Each structure stands twice: as structure tokens, then as C-alpha cells.
Length: 213
Image (cartoon, rainbow, N blue to C red; front, side, top):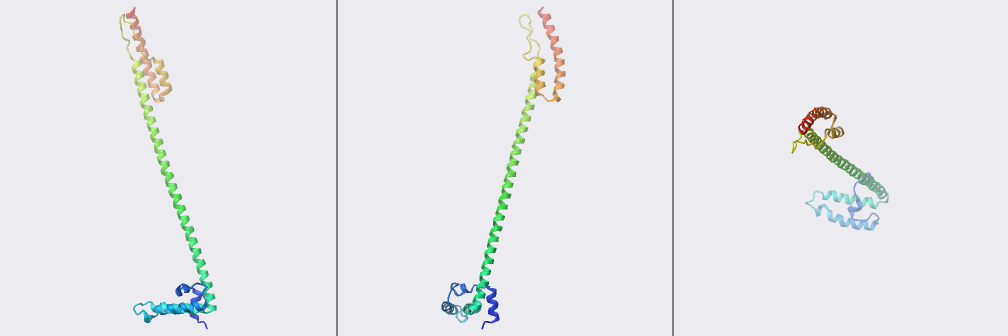
């Protein structure tokens, strides 16, 4: 008759009695008895005086034999063992899903960081291009202002009969250029400057005509 201790062991299925005896889960009574005799001799406390766990192993072998040779206890044990195996598979599947979710999350985070880095690099490139364009525009405006001023105040040169040579760039063309390219902050200033320069130029033209006549 099965003891309460054996019923608890069978229902708990804390140990793999088949693996302990070294038999398959469908082993018959003869195989179980044979393998028990081999294992019990191997782990008998008298044969292992220096092993403090020998007595515990020997007791587990006896429990495994008693449970697996009792059809009722073996059925209880097999059911509990299958339930534990199924639970273990579920845990492994859950762990696998958790690992996959973790990997997916890490990959998404890496992708997001990589995208942010690429956007920052692109923004920096655009900013540098804008700054470079603004610098070149200012340099161009400054050069045109200088050329316009130099062209407007160029004095006629006398040669031979003191014939005046006209400036290479007219005041009207300079004003047109400024109106189309310069910012508003410089246009008014340049217009006033050009007005004064036009007056000076007309005066020089008159003087040149008098010399010619």
C-alpha cells in the first residue's frame, strides 16, 4: 500500500525518477527493477563513505522504484510530470517571446537613434550650406558695392585733345544691379551715394566739355 510520503512525491514530481534510474518513461517493471539494483549498488552509502549525499541519492532511488512499480502512483507521477513539462515549455515559450520583444525593442531604439543621428547630420549640413551661401552673398554684395562706387566716381582721363573718357560702368546700370540684388538696408544708402556721385560726374563732364571746346 502506498504511503502518504510516496503520494506527495508522486504528485509533486520534483524529481525525474526515470532519469534517476536511467530508464525510458515507458519502461516495464522488469527493466525498472534491474536498473534499480545497478543504481542502488552504485550509490549505496556503504560503497560511498566519503560522499555525504550518498544516503540522499540512495533514498531517492528507493522512492523512484516504489513509485514507478506502483501503477496508481506511477499514473499520478506521470500526470504531474507531464504538467510540469508543459508548464516548462510555456515558460520557455514566454521567455522566447520576451527575448524577441526585447530584441525588437532594442532594434527599434537603435533604429530611432540612428535616424536621429542622420537627421542631426543632415541639419548640420543644411545649416553649413546656408551659412556658406549667406557668406558668399554678403561677399558678392560687398564686391558689387565696391565696384559700383569705384565706377561711379571714376574721373575722366585726358588724352590728346583732352577728350574725356566715360566710366566703364554707368550709374544707371549700378543702381539697377543694386535694386535687384542688395538688401533693403543698403539700397537707400547706395541711392543717396549715387545721387551725389551723379552730380559730381555731371560737373566733371561739363569741365571736360569746356576743355575740349
